[in-house]
Structure formats: structure tokens, C-alpha cells
Length: 273
Image 1 (tube, rainbow, N blue to C red):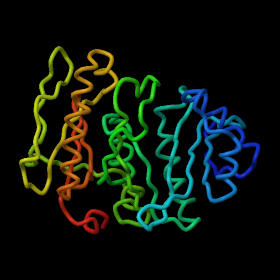
Image 2: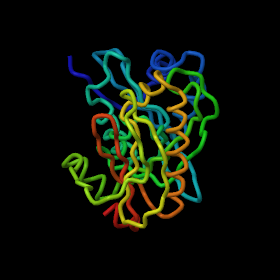
Image 3: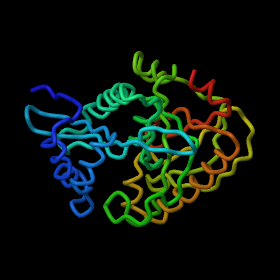
Image 4: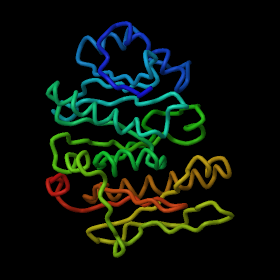
């Protein structure tokens, strides 16, 4: 049966989000139903994915306000394990875009771990989000399998819904660009099959920079937490320095062991055009 996506409007559907969140993540840290219901009544946007009558995924978002600007905060997007890697996340985000615009929003924001590159490919390459803010230890100490043992550093993604950049990706997909002349600002080696950072510095003033990160960070963590911690420390310092110097993450390029973030130094209006 085909998977259907739709905006959640019934309280019976909103009530299911608490159970779904526990199945997808940690049952001990779910958002209580009464809070979700309150958000729903006062501007929240909740989407569900259904296999027949069964909810198998959801997207959770609510209005936010930053530096005098209103926007929609996209907080959680998840699917039951057996429904992952089927392109449902992209479909859900495009539905969120249309529903958010219907509510009057022009921008959606959310966070993700920059070392989780599957999320990076979705957020930057496929959806056309951009990043110019690094949030160190955004959520404090978390103890689930994905976060345990490291600071919860995050990128803040900004998704400009009416931009030519986003519209082009929705119509044509992610463009394939080549960055052969762009310098890499972090040196690394593959040691015993594990990418290991050596040293990095923002010493270039090139219009485009490349910042490599491991393609499979969870594997690095399982093998050597010290190497994983080094990746967090090096990349955190470099991204922070780049953003302070006017660079913006605009693309992400995949290789077998390494993924490279593309940072461009140009006006935001040019990037979004």
C-alpha cells in the first residue's frame, strides 16, 4: 500500500505523536501530549505519514521568534525503522514547505549534527537549506546512542521557502557541482580504515572552501571515541571561524570515506537567488 502524507488535524492523531516519538527515539524523553496539543491549538504544524490507517512517521514544528523575525521551528522528523531510507523525509519536508507557506511563513529553521552527513545531504543538497550559525553543545549532555559521550554541537539550518534556490531544488533536484579548485581547510588521514583529523586552520581567503568530515561518524565513534572527539573539536572551531568570517554552508559533496561541506563567501541574496 502506498504511503500517504497529510497534515494532522484531529486530536486523536495528535495524541499518537507521543507514542510515535517513544518508538522512534527514547520513551523516557517524549514531549507530553498536553504540550503537543497546546502547540497544535496555537500555531503548531504537525504532519503524519501513514501506511493505510497506521501512522509510521511524523514531523513536529511550531512558531518561533528570533532577532525580531518570526519563522517556523521544525523540531522533529522521524519514521519507524522499517520505513527509513525510502525518500519519505524529502517528501515530508516538501509538504511542510507548502503547509508552512499556507500559514504565512517564509522561513523554517531546524538543527542537526553537522557530523551526521546523511542529514546534511538532505538538508543542504536536496532541500536547499543554508547554514551560517554553529551552536556548541546545543542540547547539553544527551545519553542516547547517537549523542552519548560528545557535546551536542549543532548546525542551525535556515530554509528560505520563497527563494529561487529552494524552488529550483524542488523542481529539478540537487545540482551537481564540482569544486576542484577550492582549498580544504582540515587535513586528515585514513588510519586503519578510520578517517582521522590532523590539523586545520582558516588561512585561505578563497571564495569557496571545503571542510571534510567523516562520511560515517557513528562508525568512527564505535571504533575510537578519541578520534570522534577530535572531529568534533576541529570541525567546531573551523565552522565557527568560517561563519564569523562571512562564509555560508551552501552544498555538501559525498565521497566514500569523507564528506565535504562547501562554504561560500558571497552575499546571502546571491546564494538564495
